[in-house]
Length: 248
Image (cartoon, rainbow, N blue to C red; front, side):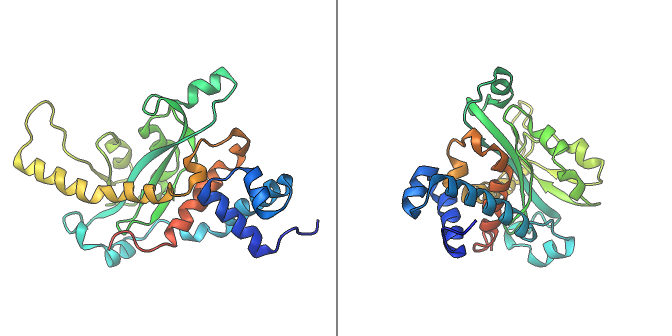
């Protein structure tokens, strides 16, 4: 069918919707086209960008990490990536079984959950598909394909809730998490390690925070967009990787 907008106007419309979180009707009024055309254009562009921007999110080689390692990581020179999970609110499903598996005890809401990995410089290097909100962090690591990226000697940094030493060991990789107190006072060495890990692990939270400046996935995502959820998150993360370097 004949285009209602120029190509650059279509792309602008998609980026505006991602960033501002406007619903279809608002965008329809803004662009002066029917809501059905907005929906069609948005779906087409998100799928297109998802395919075309794959090169922006890739697992780094050890040489790339070593060459670009920020000074902040001087105490953790073998760190290849920092990982964390985050949740996205989703419209409450009508089916009870779907309500149950998307229910997040942490968020007290219906959510979808994804695993993110960043390089020491703060760029996204892995994004899982979205899982239901009830899934554990360990299970996402196990089922997302993240482990397939690991090579002998890789060191992964995470929060202490990621009890995945056994999963990484199978790939000859190691886990760097803050020490557990086990009900006792931490030693001076353990306190120092905890502080040092916290000072660099915060960058994965900053990266996810940057992604969540895109308001569409940050709001309550409507179920009618479900077929596009994974692609939208990936596109937003890809656009973040085009921004300035997060860790210098």
